[in-house]
Image (cartoon, rainbow, N blue to C red):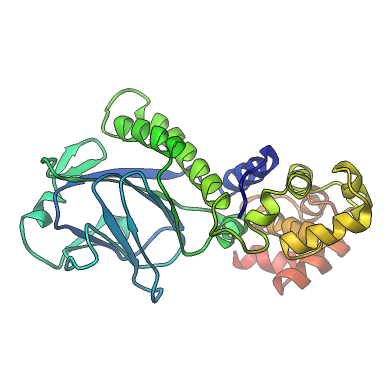
Amino acid sequence: MCDRLTLATMDVLSDLLHRARARNATVRQLIQRPPWSLTYADGPALTVVATLGGQASIRLDDVPGAAASLTAGDIALIGDVGRYTVADDPATAAQLVIHGGGRKQIVGDGPAVQATLHNLAPRTYGDGLPGATVLLRSTYDLHGTVGERLLSMLPPLAVVPAGPRTRAVLELLTGETARDEPGQDGVVRQLLDVVLLIALRAWYAGPAATRPGACLALADPAIGQALRLLHEDPGRRWTVAGLAAEVGMSRAAFAARFSHLVGEPPLGYLTTWRMALAADLLRDTDSTIAAVAREVGYADPFAFSAAFKRARGMSPSAWRQVS
């Protein structure tokens, strides 16, 4: 179990979120008395669900056995899993299916169906009556290869139990969600980023994050610092000895510890990270292949092209055409 995360860890997570453009977020609040059930047919890349009052259940419809129950203050992180259902109770029959673009399909009956379509306030819907579940659901459309890398660090469904830090920011977010003031969308998005980062940090510090490449690497002071350095300056001509010296370890001890915790050797991780950055640069910019090569640490564009083809199965120019 990892009992702490270093500043370096959060810099790595912040870097991944920034590069994945995880700022294009939406947030909605449900205040609804049970029974209620909402199915999302086209889930986004990343969803954050939090209960502020009452309880809820989550079921990943396309992942057998993936389900969780949430009580007040709990946060669930849902990856790019396709269809999933959020309800007051696992036994509640399906009522409403929400498709991409917000199109709603009624599949059940009862007063709760119409109530969940009722707008109470900005970004808030439900009946708003006593005894209601208060639920926040926010979505991120992560971008590109770096976004895929971020998602690969999480299971399809991760639950962060309620805690004093998450509770405080959730209460602030739910209070701001229903407001309609100048700049409110920006305020909500900033708070949502904070919720996501705190939830990621809390999950990596918990007992569930024990596989290589996740908590074990990120919470280790030396290896977390090494990861931060690689993320801060991927174009630098790093060596294993140079990284080891930066974090105050011998070369052999550093190489063994990095490989054990991350799941691949230091320069293997660096190459993978460079290729992820290059893939997004090729897709999203008009930079020449030589310029992209230089940005990710290759003085020779031919060497870069060979490395990229090994990693992606096609040349940089072919990747740019199909992306």
